[in-house]
Length: 119
Image (cartoon, rainbow, N blue to C red; front, side):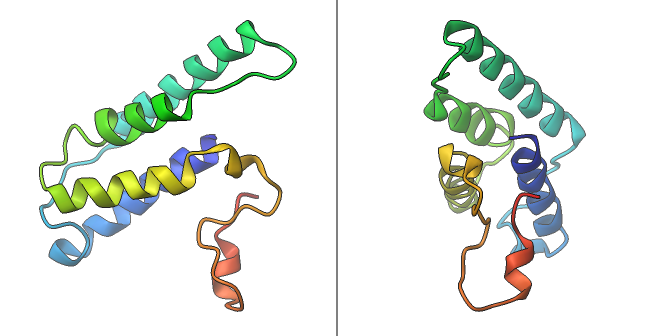
């Protein structure tokens, strides 16, 4: 989970470098967004683990909402930028991230894209 949130943060930081090609409007994402997202995820996962120690059920809908629409999305004003960020969250923030073969970019046959996986 920590790696996924940090990867998401690195993507938004990189997209800023490309100006209008990265985001329609330049946003000032910073370390506070990352810290708040990680803090929320830690508290949510700890709470869910105390409810059920054998098989905790995380609310991915709540995690996606808090990370993509509150922490980072609170700065996003353009609808297309918001849709893009929510799409990142839909794909990356799910139970699938815990699967051994999870990749951030699952295109088959391209050796470079195989680097985008959780170590």
